[in-house]
Length: 493
Image (cartoon, rainbow, N blue to C red):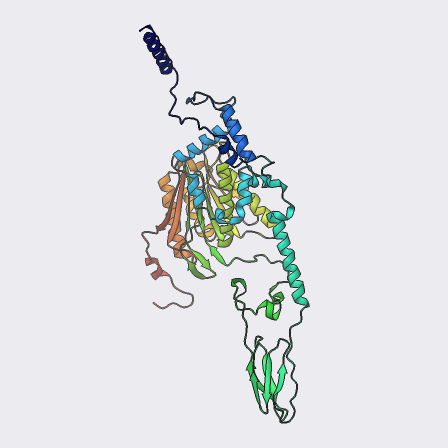
């Protein structure tokens, strides 16, 4: 009886200790290996053995499920600031993944180096590994095993083949006059194609591969034309329709190479016309029609010439459309770099205008200008209305009202009636500025042959950011004044 009480007390004490200690999950009993089993097992790799030893030495006997405390100095302040920056952009409706997905620049596969530089990676990081160098060392390969060495060797092989093919002379078909009434006369070209002539006849036989004319001499020594031999075409996509190199030698494409000097654009072909902008007390209004003219032809009627840059700036493009597309890609790349930046400071309209002025002046100095005149509208660093211009020479100027193209002659007088100088900007409301721009767009559609009645308009304010409306239509048009327009010369009524 006493022994039973002692056993019961021992069991209750063990249960109390288990209740107070962390619970351990179900575990499989340790497997017992016999000497035969150990000998039959396959040896483990050095990596697996090391990992297994580290695990056994560091695994606690009783698992600790608590979240460990952060190490000293974490989280890094720079990383925290970067996350706060992205969360702030997300609250403003700016999603970085959407901008990346819609970016035409990122669809270029050659952007890998730039993305690696933005992420702080070098060329060696793309071959990085968590294994030790004695197991796997990606830097131990010879130079010819990397992509640069492979590309260099491929280029050398291609140059060697091209040099050998140039030394190979094209085969030539020799004609030998047949004797009078010769029977079974045979003429053979360099590749083995045969002409068998019997009297005044000739028969094409095997191996007719070359696109050369076939002819023979008849019994009267007259040359008779039979036609062309069979033609072997290259069916590879990059050389479709050309003669096969292994049959006819390397294809001579030297006539396709231009040996003249490098040429730049001397006059734009596809162009956009006027861009208008005016300040008001809380921001800036900017507008441009959606027409791109091919010379005097109204060719493209859906070209948007207003581009937004973050939530504070709009850029209006006048002039060459291809150069506009180049600048658009340049601004998109700059916007991506700014989104990666964790400084917390965005480029304002004044900063962007300075950047574009440097770009335009640099291209002008290279004697390769971008044939555009740009209007940069938005808010400066103090959230005040900003409006400035830059042309293809890098010339810049600022005014409360600006216009490009024919708008500088037709619309500027109307805009200056609303805003004469900087002192009048504070007295102009948003409605007055928008109505003035719309009225000027109507006048330009009346008077400018390179304009369109469909346009884009943007309003930049501190409270709402950029409000861009595209595919707007002119309203209230009236052509009654056309009846009063008379041509030159004597008029009869």
